[in-house]
Image (cartoon, rainbow, N blue to C red):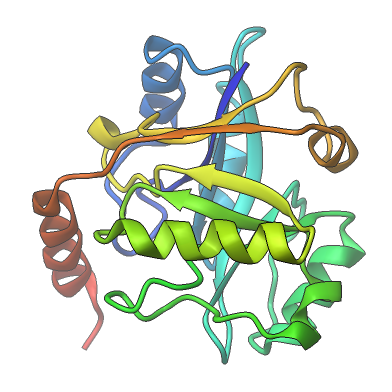
Length: 212
């Protein structure tokens, strides 16, 4: 079963895709599930959940901006309101959610958390493949960090447009309905890079929508 665990909808300032389109596209791409992880909100995930089908699981999540960089929370039911790393982690834990560090070593985007040894107890998973990492070494460094610290792994397309959905993710043996089921798995990661044009379009969209 294939899951893309990092997708953005129009509810992200730099996202474009309708939640319903995310679900339809994920099904067409042969995915078993998709995590909608909009920036600083679960609205997109909750909306996408309305279109969940028997053969396409929607995981409600959010990619939260903290004082150190971005953190993904999965299996959320409430908005995360804090903005410091420890407090965000605590809010996710309070919801029995999963704490994932996305694209931690991507120096080009510069919005990932470079984890230290003190962070390891706070983290459930490390995203070891992100399709929007332009340099392969960033994903490789994430994989090496996860392996050396015995952390669980995650992967996703980081899609901001429908064409990107399903470019990366994990393959697991069973349907994932809660955090424990994901943590019990030993996923196989798959992925291909996103073209640079989509990164440029994202920046244009973000600039256009940015309030003045």
